[in-house]
Image (spheres, rainbow, N blue to C red):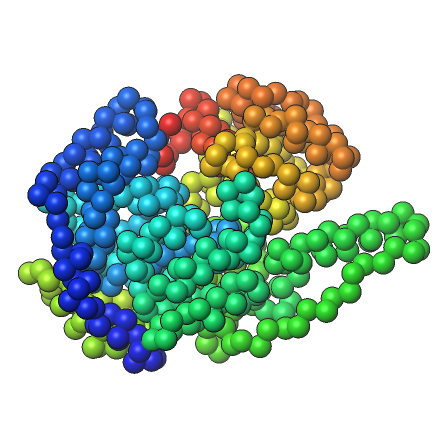
Length: 504
């Protein structure tokens, strides 16, 4: 199942590293209590956001993150990439828990290092102990570089590289370089997207002794999930088709000259249907119904399944279980061994059941009932994400709203909106556009000849009016990250909205 070099990733920890991790400031005993107090105060006063307690703890005890995560018997799974981090992290954590392990994760999408620390503060006891076997952590591409300087992940899942927040990351080759640091520091297994050329190239920097695994797409599905480089070609092809339909016989589409990658994937997404996916898993074809919304999340499911099976492969080597118990160094060893064995023995059918039960992450296809209307929140933050959301949620017989902000967490540069094809909305119009950049969004829609009924930068009022209009009609709200938080807060005043724990 597993190459022996992965054992080295778990067992060959130098005494120098042990000593470095073990260092504690004299006041370390108080770190959890201080952090929890700050978190409680921040939530009561609605000031500081979800990462604020982590910021304080990083200042008073910089080694807290490393020291706490180092004690986990199965180490850290780091999930990063441009699209799908939050949902994929949720999938991996949910599957591992359903198959028997105790999992720590950062479920709110607060994916900076201080966000991870804040999440830790909700789970550790007063002594700073974390009751978990493994951590599954979503990290922002840039902050993943800072994280791996403190904690070397045992597993890494790298999803894709797309244009996103150009003001922060620059062009996508720079984003790929950021992710290369994750691949270089992973000690056990790196799982890569076979279909993304920049992610696939990271196999070259995976260190000796660390295994590389892959997830991918069938040839039939590749056109539905173009890489960033293929996006322009896809848009040009559609434009040429529109020109030919209008009578321009000279219009030609770019030719397809992509060479099919021959790397064998551990998990391949073969076919998709309505809330259903078929995978090829190491030669075995298997299907499952899913609760997740959007065809793009089925590709994320292939990625999640690949990393879960990589972890299982480790635990199928009994030596790794023995090593993990030594790392754990606590009295309650046997419960962990029992959980590890149960997980190691889980069948592919068990894994499919676990995958089928995963529910959407907040704001990522999340559905909220507002007076009998289903309101679906759809996070969009780059051309590919918006394109796939539009393809996954047909606008017919639905009302559509778009909310665009340009805060730091959204990215200040909104030029990417011009790389999204909105023509699918022409026949149904957009009922409302809001957010800080409402007028920019309305202008973009006008260029694609999409009618817009209402434009207003007052997001909270516009969202409430939109959600309460046309009772019984399904509503789609496409929103950037901070707009999504505002949308959820507005809907919470008129409907039951779960607490995502992200503060205000």
